[in-house]
Each structure stands twice: as structure tokens, then as C-alpha cells.
Image 1 (cartoon, one colour):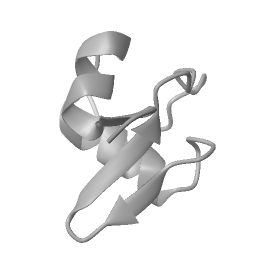
Image 2 (cartoon, rainbow, N blue to C red):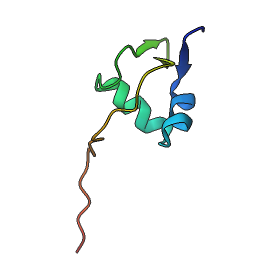
Image 3 (cartoon, rainbow, N blue to C red):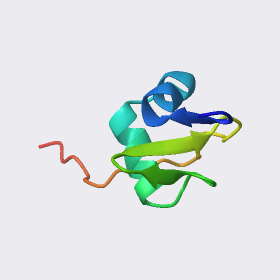
Image 4 (cartoon, helix red, strand yellow):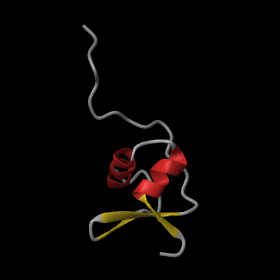
Length: 61
């Protein structure tokens, strides 16, 4: 699709996992991202969101 990339392509571009990109899209943190069937499409010029939140805190005992 012209002008858009997949979550997997965005993950490679941004240096994160494709799952992390999917989570960012689901949380509406990637402007212009939308879902087509089962895949996220992201504008080619979308910037990596800053301040990625972690859904679960790890405890060090």
C-alpha cells in the first residue's frame, strides 16, 4: 500500500519489536495508524513515539 508500512517494517525502522509497535498503535500513540483486517498500517513518515510506557513493572527482589 503506497504511503504506508506494516508494524513489522516500523519495528525495524524504530528499533523495537513488532509487538511493541502494535501496542503503540492500539493505544493511539502513532498518528495516522489504522487497522486493516488483522494488520496495522502506519504512515511511512510516522515518527517513533517517545516515552514508551511499560504495561507491567518488573520488581527486583
